Amino acid sequence: MVMSFRTGAPRRPRTGGGEEEKVMSNQPLMPKATAVWLVENTSLTFEQIADFCGLHLLEVQGIADGQVAAGVRGLDPIANGQLTKEEIELGTQDPERKLRLLKRDLPQPRKRTAGPRYTPVAKRQDKPDGIAWLLRNHPELKDSQVVRLIGTTKATILAVRERTHWNTPNIRPRDPVLLGLCTQVDLNQAVEKARIAKEKTEGPGKPAVAEEQPAEPAPAEPAATEQAPTDIGEGFNATFD
Picture 1 (tube, rainbow, N blue to C red):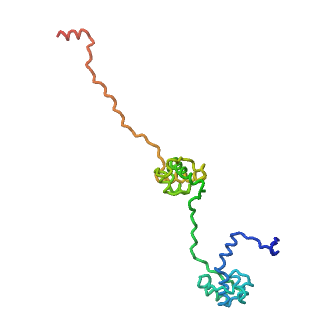
Picture 2 (picture 1 turned 60 degrees about the vertical axis):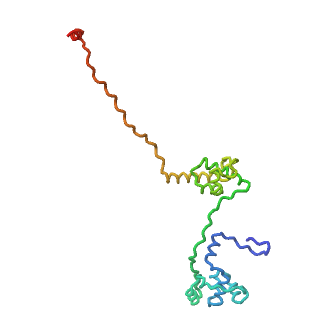
């Protein structure tokens, strides 16, 4: 057993985060204030209150004696929707019964979406170069993808594209991966995603089909000419007839 160096008392073993969350989810909000209200307004046993509020039995006894949580104002679990009046009556009738916490139907908090990528101050001056490289080598990328990759704004992308950026004469297209503005994995994923989106919009490329040209008409055969006389005598006689 591990001993604490300050008090010499045995140290409590650490539990996983999942077990702690499970225990906290089975307890009412503000357990001590809830215990104060239950002690003052119900005839439940100390064991029932301690089990419901997740407190030690001696803490509940101290609350009843006024030695613990003397300045704490009681919190009504019925008004907060954590316990019903019928459940308290059933617990009063049966001292062995454990109180059941009502399930909360409160909406879960939304997860924060990842904001723009943080870029060290020393590398922020290289962002226009990385944007120019992406616009030249990967025009299929959307501005929103470039924003997430480099951590810039759409206004900056537009200025670099239209050459209205204040530092346009000094912008040199350079690979953002080599500049340390993004990783090669993120760049490949963005390019692949843009390619798939482009194929869905425009359709897969189809092989070009050569247009059929009309066949040229065959050359007409020359008209048959009169056959020359084969007999010299026939020709001679025809001349003098």
